[in-house]
Image (cartoon, rainbow, N blue to C red; front, side):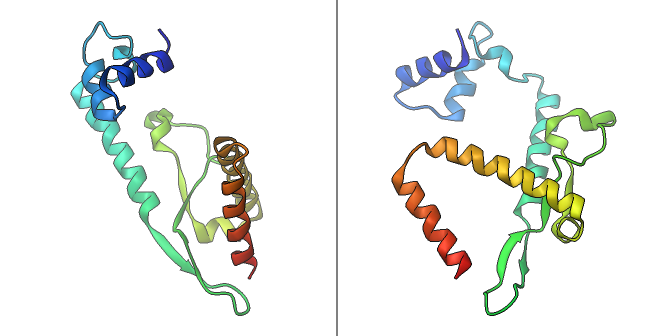
Length: 150
């Protein structure tokens, strides 16, 4: 059974799909999703702390002044460095331990800024795929673009 089918079966049985329900059901060693989880509590705790640390890094924002009469904007203080990080070392082979750089350092470097915008473009393309051909989404984006160009 593939992941989609297993999740659909959980939804069908419980009439909702939450992480708590998925983990509870997958705790059964015979369940097809069981092997998708880390059941060693010390390793799971380490990985969860990495998720928490990533969230903590992403939670910090700074105010950036803009030119002219445009109002200042809040942006993340640290930017994920997906394209220019050195090769993984020791514990850095875990995808949760990605590198982040201060946003000021990123925008001050042509190489880092270009890499950051490539990353933003990939994020934007993924968001467009998720939204599909929704006209409501398109109107929302166009409204935001107009506000930004204001």
